[in-house]
Amino acid sequence: MKIGVFDSGIGGLTVVKSLLEHKLFEEIIYFGDTARVPYGIKDKNTIIRYAIEAVEFFKNFDLDMIIVACNTVSAYALKEMRDSAKCPVVGVVEAGVQATTNSLEDKNSNILILATKATINSKAYENLLREKNYNNLEAKATGLFVPLVEEEIYNGEILEATFKHYFKDIKKPDAIILGCTHFPLISKALSSYFNGTKLIHSGEAIVQELEKNFTFSKKYNDTKLQFFASENPTALNNIAKKWL
Image (cartoon, rainbow, N blue to C red):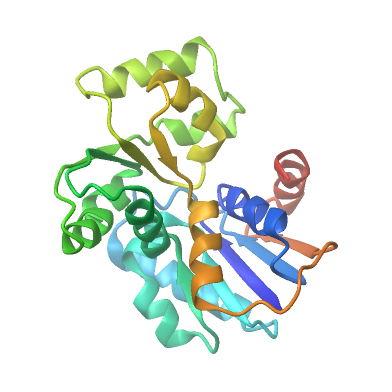
């Protein structure tokens, strides 16, 4: 099994980490559109165009599947990617919603969705959750977390101050959807701040979705990895070494 993982930048490496831990694939080809990150502040048509260009990039490889690690792309451009691709395309939003419903039997549970501005504006998570009769939802655009993570600030005073800025009027939720692949890197700090609230991690959600819908005949202990970036691939490789 050879797959492509697409993200607007480096955040999708957290999804790759989950895939590696579960040993699902023989080869993973990662493409980060680092020249045009962040996608979370761009308009829908631009996001769709970039997503289709990513599919064209992956056509250089004989892939069995494409995983869209970017929540913003999953919210706006999954259909267009599926129409353009020659293999299955799986997105993190649908997987995240399914993981949330698996974790919360009580449909009156309070769910907090954290994501970039574009993902929040799409209402992708909210619409899918409401279809499943979960209505106690609050969505918060927390774009400042992205540069903090990229500066490797995973805890400490700056992050705590950012939490207080975003969450000062929010009561403790039953679950938090980490609707950006950067956010799992601050999950320990979030768990401490909200004192044990369930966190829905895109990487683990994707693994659950894959294992539910596809058959995996074996485990791969030595997955081959290739990393590509639209700008500064050396920096992506260096971050991959740290995060993975």
